[in-house]
Length: 186
Ligand code: IMP
Image (cartoon, rainbow, N blue to C red; front, side, top):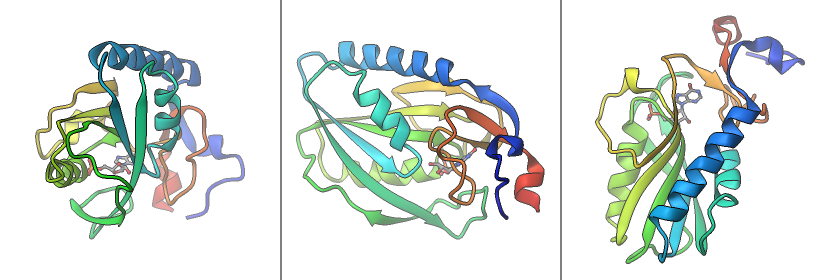
């Protein structure tokens, strides 16, 4: 599939505007700053989809914090469906034992990727671990996972933008939109 030169033409509907996202990220930052007051939090973001969210959220948290980055790829699924089989492409660069970790995710769909990551990170003995997800698509959840912070609950549709891709494209859209089925069926 090749994205249109005008990426917005491949978007059927804008679900969340740039302004809505910015306002909610600021709220999440305030809430996290209050909840972790007196602690040094480590934000762990999962590349590549969480990159814009992480960059915006960390600047809305008014506490000393560290960041680390992981990259995972799921395999065995299809272009729009995850399989739960996760391969770690990039691991943490510093230990997290005894630290308060906040796992920053772009979207929770089936929950399989997050379920794997949480088990993996808990094995590294953090003092606490919570999840902060920008988007939650509860309709398709296969494993129940406690989400500490959620930006927006969204309906069951394949979305792109603000970090989220289809075929590695559309990540740089400043809004979150529903991709036209024609864009991935062709
Ligand atoms: P899960 O394992 O099914 O929860 O899928 C999580 C991962 O699948 C996310 O981190 C995204 O990379 C990708 N994903 C799930 N739904 C969407 C979507 O609607 N648009 C883009 N990527 C998605």
